[in-house]
Amino acid sequence: MITELQTAISKVPSRKARLKGLTRVESVKLKVERAALLFRGAPVAISISAVNACITTAIAWSDVNLNILLSWAIAVLGLSFIRAGIWLRFRFAGTSGRNMSRFANLHLFFMAVNGALWGALAPIFAVHGLIGHAFLPFVIAGMTAAAIVSAGASWRAVIAFNVPALAPLAVVYAFAAGSDGVAIAGVVMLYGAATVYLAMTMQRMVDRSILLHTKNTALFSALQRQVDEAHEAEQRFRGLVESSGDVTIIFSPEGKITYASPSVEKALGADPEDMIGLTTKDIVREDDIPQFRAVGEKSLSKLGEVMTLDHVCMKGPGDRKYVALSGRLTNLLYVPGVEGIVFNGGIFDEAAHGVVHAAE
Image 1 (cartoon, rainbow, N blue to C red):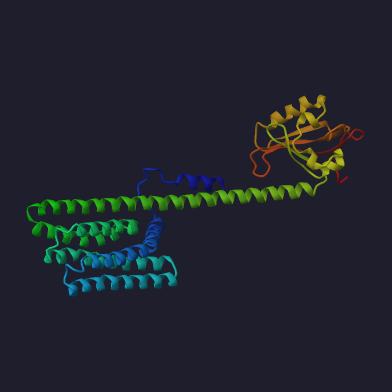
Image 2: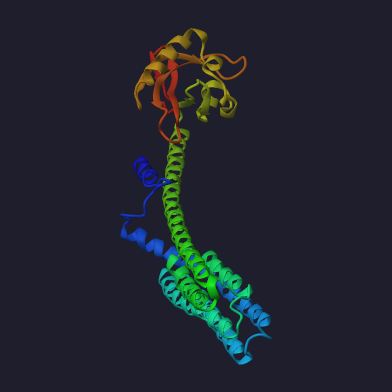
């Protein structure tokens, strides 16, 4: 149990953790989780593409040949409907690892097709003398930024859209934008390189988050098992103790009672619940406290150490009479569910010079 916990903690990646040397299971999990993130981000990407296509058509309605513009708009909207249908199909089919991997491959392909359609705006605008229109770079930049947001879990998906969307824009500016065209094309290429770098950085962050979540899940499972085992151990301990007629009292390291068995009521005339919170000074006769403490200190030297108490007088809370007991102290401080010094014994029979257990 402790070994499992230590193993889980040791595998938690540091802030500078590298993603090299992953096991096959971890690699597969990363791919599946990335695909699941792409699946969740797909509706956003599809919606943005469809809405922007409508806005672009409305803005260029009077400046671009309607046949060309409508053909472009129908292609973008048609692709959006196809992508939405595929997304719904996989949603109803279930989000298994196999389905998510298949969806990621299709999504990558359609991102590339969609990027090519948006990249086609550059030559369309250039043919109609609108290369200097401020809307063109604005909408292309907005679409590439949206690709990073919706598909940041996979830098390949981002590149699949951004490269075919930005490359035609850079070429058109280089050859059709006059003296400043080359400089503008350089800016577009620099922007494209920046989006690629940002996409790769985002994927590394996503991968580390997935790994950290995986390790945290393993750590939580180990902790949960430890808690469950401790609870079971406590239940077994209490069951055994409560079925016995001997007096069992657990003292915390500070000397306070944390548990008293039901047999305390018969031996000391006190309700077990009334014993909780009392200290050795409250229940042990003053003359017996030094020996009680001495035996207790010896029992602390080793886990499971058992020290004999030949004779000790205890009483319940209030003005009750002391009762002579004899038993033993056991160090169970580090045993889950106990975590204390345990006194276990019976009534001392002076005539027989021994202990009278409840069974007798």
